[in-house]
Image 1 (tube, helix red, strand yellow):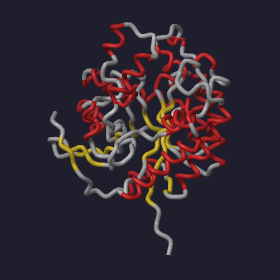
Image 2 (cartoon, helix red, strand yellow):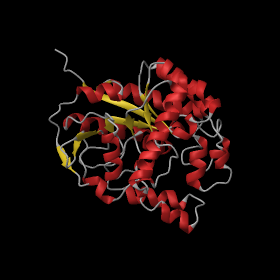
Image 3 (cartoon, rainbow, N blue to C red):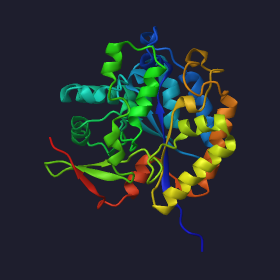
Image 4 (cartoon, rainbow, N blue to C red):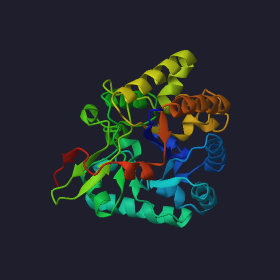
Length: 321
């Protein structure tokens, strides 16, 4: 008898060209230059070829721009799920007041609904930004889950690397001082759990999966970096991550970003970003290799379906109002 595969899910944070320029400190980001009309048709065809349905987390600002509506609508038309990635895509979301967080969430919801015809009830914070206030707002607004936690101990190193490669002023770096979270994120569970509120309500958390025990990332961005050193090393790294997930019965929640799949041949203005020296064709080939390796061991479903498969008796972590 074949052993039943663990369920897994794939999501893509649909960060647009302007959002990368914004976090890098480049002029012109506020004119909202976009690659959505190039990227989305490309990736939707690739996902069809790989027979994958995934969850796209859309930025509200992109959905608020009318020229993006048709291409964003194509995500829903092709059978993929749509989640909320905030309106302004500011990685310091956790510093917002509770009132401003709710406004941010609601504004993104309405823009995404107008653009796609879908009302969102799934959320991931930009730059893995989250707070108790955010969780309470999501629970109040009847979200199925939050997916903002990246359980890794190396968040401060990721942030420092980002600062080294940016044009940000001292004040801008200060505003982003908690980008990617802190060392304490590494102590949160890898498997889904429930936030437990003082009023007795709960909210499901689906963390982005990092390597069990070691808690180092293995989502597509990291595999690309390793592939620049050696494709063989990348395969070994992924296979070991898969082995650790299976050994600990951890269902991967696998993360993608647009720049994992397109290079500077498609977006020359983002040549500064790590990994953009890899051509789009090679990135797509690496993605295909990665997915085929993962599909040998896991059954992939969209995140909402995955959330429904989870037991209501998951571990609970209490938060205070």
